[in-house]
Image (cartoon, rainbow, N blue to C red; front, side, top):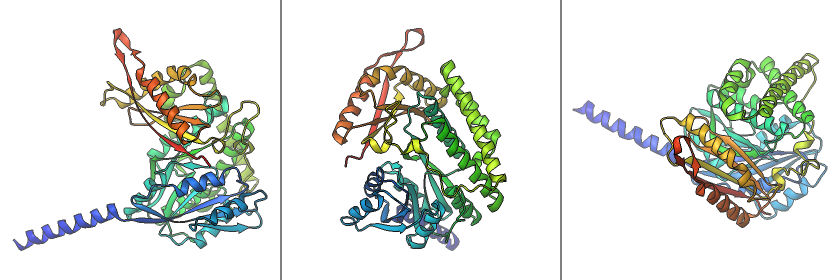
Length: 438
């Protein structure tokens, strides 16, 4: 009887501990590493300040401005005057991102640290979804899911979308974290010569015995390269950095293994190839990635350093003169639509997702007629679910984005879509908008 009572008390205590872990407030500091980001820094800081905080609390934002020659520093200083949580650290010379991160690590004191690029826009719940994982004491680092806003109906835009789709699938199998991450404040520094800082942090966290977690529901929006030259430049630097980490820190990113990547690529074929042109683009993307990896190997052999990044110009310009594609920092709103079929078979999510994606793709010409010509619509699927996600990037304020979202949602939901044997189906659509009107 005594032993049963003791066991019951132990179970009650354990449930109480588990409950407190689920509801404990997580305090975090965000680091923003910036080099000549006058076009982006204000929007990014506003997006961070507007993050939801039900179970988390933002202690401070530390901006490290490295060798900036534009208005980045003055913009941050202007925001400091009205927001005490923003702190600015200035490096007079550009010494590389790893050096800026080490400066951030020296000044951040919260139990959890997050890092996000100055040209990346997080959804309102992103940091909450990242940081709540740290209620589990076994978790050491969590990464978000990057969503590119490039036009996927150009070759380079298609290549960027394809790479991030594969990154998402690979990260679900074996976490490979980047673009926006959160980790426990257990690091003193990372190697100053690292060209892939997130992987260096991954290596340190993994060596401490803590778990890595990929959180696909934590979305951040970014813009990839828009030219073949810049695509190769970026992928070359990343692969050379991965090789360096594998050589010096004995840690290998999951995306280094070609076999699993090809396996995921084959699984993606129904979603990424819908015409001979897209088949050629897919082959071209594989070829560019292979060339970039060969160049990365060459750089490692020649001991060429990439820790001070060469700027990828096409991902920094506000407008491409040839295609008039705006970068996200020049767009004021992002709308994310989650699309289902009303009669979807929950037992076959992969099949339903493929069917829904095909339906939405056929509707794109109609949807484009309801938005401006320069606005962007991109489709992405979610592995293991039956829904399709469509992202709209619009030059609109909060009110305009809401009106556009309602209009597009209504257009999709009123469609009576024919299926085989005279059957018809309809779409169910939900959405949320992220606006950054200044």
